[in-house]
Each structure stands twice: as C-alpha cells, then as structure tokens.
Amino acid sequence: MIGMMNSSALMCKQAWPNLLNLRNLPQKDKVVVVMGVTGAGKTKLSIDLATQFRGEIINSDKIQVYKGLDIATNKITQEERCGVPHHLLGVIDPYKEFTTKNFCNMASLSVSSITDRGKLPIIVGGSNSFIEALVHDNSYHFSTRYDCCFLWVDVSMNILNSFLYERVDKMVDQGMIKEVRNMFNPKSKDYTKGIRKAIGVPEFDSYFRAELSNSVDIETRERLLKDAINEVKINNCILASKQLEKIKRLINVKGWKVHRLDATEVFTKKRKEEEEKAEEIWKNIVMGQSTKIVGKFLCEDNRKSMVYTSDGTASCALI
Image 1 (cartoon, rainbow, N blue to C red):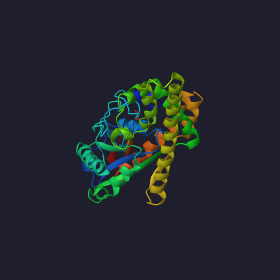
Image 2 (image 1 turned 135 degrees about the vertical axis):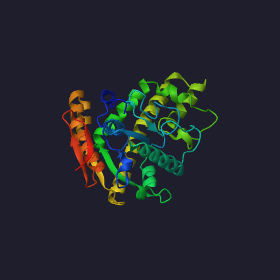
Image 3 (image 1 turned 120 degrees about the horizontal axis):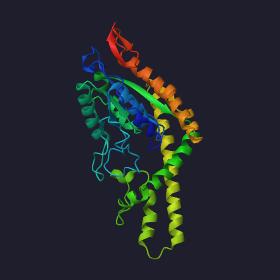
Image 4 (image 1 turned 180 degrees about the horizontal axis):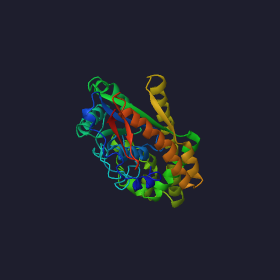
C-alpha cells in the first residue's frame, strides 16, 4: 500500500476523542476485521479507521509478522502508520516458523490488551486462514468474548492486477533487489521456512546464483533478472486470486456476514493519474461507508446511539 498511504498521513487527527470505554459496554467487546486481497487498500482503510475510532492495529499477514524485508513484504512505514500502534508487525525472527497457533496466541493477547485500555482492536491482513482460525478456535473462546465486524475491501481483479504489476516495479526502484540479496544464502535452496517463503525471495534465486558465477555472461544475467521480476508480478496476482477465493468461501460456505466495500473506481482514477478524484471517491465511498458500518457496530446496544457534533466528531451516548 505504498502508493495508497500518502494521503492517510494527512488524516492523523483523532476524530473520536469521546468514544466510551468499550470495556464498559454491557455486551461483548468489539473487534473490527479488515480483509481483502493483496494491494486492495486494507492498510489504508485500517489506518483511517484507527484514527477515526481510537483503534490499534493487529497485523494478520503471515509474512509481514517477520522482521526484515520491509520493501519486499510491503510493510507500512512508520510515517504511514500515522501514530497508530501496531501489533504483530515485524516482530518475529525471520528464520523461525510462525504457525497459526502462534498467531492465535499472540493475537488474542493483543486484542485483550487493547480492549482493556479502552481502544478498538482492528485486525488487518491478507492471511484469511489466520483470521478464520482465531475466530473459530474454541481454545481462545474468541467468538464468545468478542463481536466482530468484518469489512472487505474489494477491487476488480482486472484493475488490481495492473496495479500489482506497477507496485512491483516501484518496489524494485526502492531497492527490493538489494534487500532480498542480503537474505540470499548460496548454500541453501530451501524457501519453505520463515520469511524466505515471501513472494519476492525465491524468484531471485537463479539471478543471484548467476551473479556469483564467472561463467554467466551479462546478457544472461539481465534476462534472469527480468524473468525474476516478472515472476514476482505473476505470483502476486496468483496470491490475490487465492485470497479472493478464501474470502468468498468464508462468506458462501462459512456464512460470515461481511460488508463489501468496492474500491474499484478508486484504482481506476489512480491509473488515470486523477489522484484528487481517487481520494474523494475513497473518502465518500470506501471510508464513508465503513465509518457508518463501524459506528453502527460499536453502538448497536439499544440504549446507545451516535451523537455527531458540528466539528464532525462523534461518540456513543445514552439515549
């Protein structure tokens, strides 16, 4: 979400300073879950919602949980975080395995800590298997302790695929190849553990080995580099397609009530370099709809409703 995050840094104002302590509500604590395929805008929406509703973000991306490879894994930068606390982001040793059970343990502790402090937990990431496990694992009693609001940032795959291709080119310009080269181990071709599983790491193996070989000419090296970059682009699109199918399964098979937010027009305008129009559509459609959905979700206790003031701030209040 490198390109999508710039405008979010301008929205760091806390718009909900009077939000009632969620622990005092006579009902289950509230959790917002932001889903979507890679590149669709989950990160941007999570920051927008966190600044609006005094939230803290819990990363549920199984690759971004590792330390390192910030460019290749597309981690949100400190500046882009807008001062919002993040949990489970870049905290695990890159060479260790991070399992579903590990995620459930750490995420459940983070959710509990956030709600204890009267803040709103916002779980965001593309690893829907992690989210599903957390919600349905009886060991954590998650569904009996928390009410979840599921938001799905959706973008037409034809439009999104073009964006994903362009995003990889931007990553390359920002130094992704050098970053991944530092992770390269010529003694091992095992890319099944830790952060080495990340898209953008195994694809460059042949190219890096060619760099170390005196028998490979420059022309061959350039071809291998081009092939590796193209493979990263293709694999990102394949990942997005798989993630979309998982979200549809959660809706159609598991019966999850998920609020779909269509961000296709935002990306269409961005491709036409109409940045102002893209941001306006984001605010009015994606952010606007999600704000109403989350606001209603937080105050669905019949004795409370939203109170809006002239400056745009809001809070849950007794009626």
